[in-house]
Length: 590
Image (cartoon, rainbow, N blue to C red; front, side, top):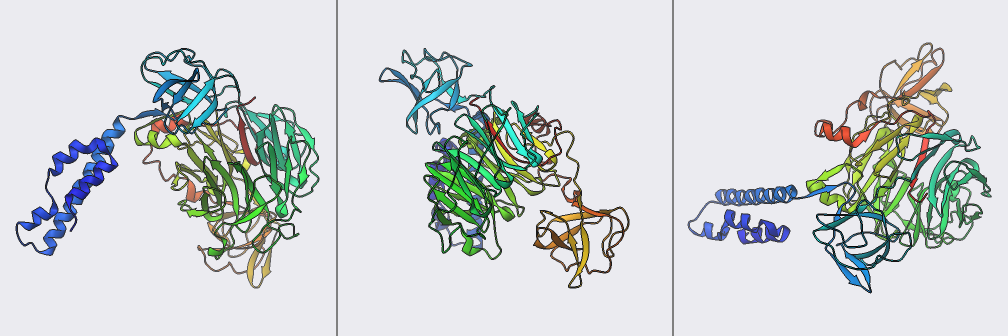
């Protein structure tokens, strides 16, 4: 028999502040005592038990609501300072689980006066983190810690400083490069190439972008770019910096490394520890995303490939649960938060790992392909209150993908769908200067102050139509040829024409992609997972297809979101280009 004392203990353990409320609700009664007074049929006993659990639930909700009312925090992750003490003559700041690293830039606030040596509205650099609960700061990067004089008065707190000298850089098709200091106003830069650019990162005072046929460009400012020799003609998709090394990855498991972004070494032919094969073979899997964390490079790609390396040279393949999936999967992007790698890919696959070696699958809540992900230790400029403020103290993951999907997670395990209204792809997302920026098809740029509420830019994001090269009879079915269509099974599209569509197809009608034998052809059905449209004729004139917007004009959360908060937290970005943007990064080190 379950005793009420057990329920009470559970509440007290979960939230000690509820003690008085629990006591007033339950007093010292137990379910055993109530039932011992008389013989009661099982049905009544169960009713009493359910009623007790119901009261317990109300108590938890009441306690949590009270706690939430007392919590107010900004999305810039304002964190309380427990104490300020003298440690070797320097100010040592104690802040529980601060998650700061050396080089982070923070500011201080107080209810009264800050310790001498610290000032309001001033940037300070973290120069030492002797434990997860303490750190030191300096007035200059890598400088001497602030000398201790006193602890000040009142309650102090810190938050990540919003840089005003940082720079966003986004790259894409036809060599397009755009830069922005705030994520709002963008300037087109001259790259010197018409090749598609797929990846961009910043490190060692250098921006590096990579793309088609081994293209690599570098820039110290983001304004002027210089071509570098990569030594490969393979397409390069992802690039990162960590441990004093740039690493870029691409087609056929190509991996290049460089200490300065100028001179590159090809490690693709190095022997690797794999699960029964070598990735130097011509038919090896493509690699799409790469990141660095906790002394480890991790790259991901086709056929659920995961490779790790501590030096960028010797790589080991890890099992990303490939054996458990019937259909082929690909991983497209990966990011890192302290002690946690998180990757995303086909059909909403989301995995995470504490060490890059052992992986667990998580539920993303979407079946759409996810191709971009980032992590920020701050949740932006918007004001966070209540329970959200507490969750956001550990930062936030943001992932983007097909049909404008945007998902967020506070821990990398549980994911929530956010506003989406786009009919096509978002390819990449990053965070900087209090702003989340995501980019995608037709030059779309979407921004958010909190990672939760998003608004597409004002113009230039019209739905793109893709030409159909030919229509032909294949085994009695209508095969549609369209170069590099990028479609997947389950996609919903519509057709247009300058003449008449092939028999079996109609204008202003949704069709479901049911087969994609190669990247230049596909088949459609009138119903989801239905039979292919039968071939009768080719029709007349020139045909084209486009993603159907009919299913995505609404949002899943418009009814629940606060309209005023949404307007404050997000904003449109003026149109700059119609070229597809594949990657975006931010640096505050300029």
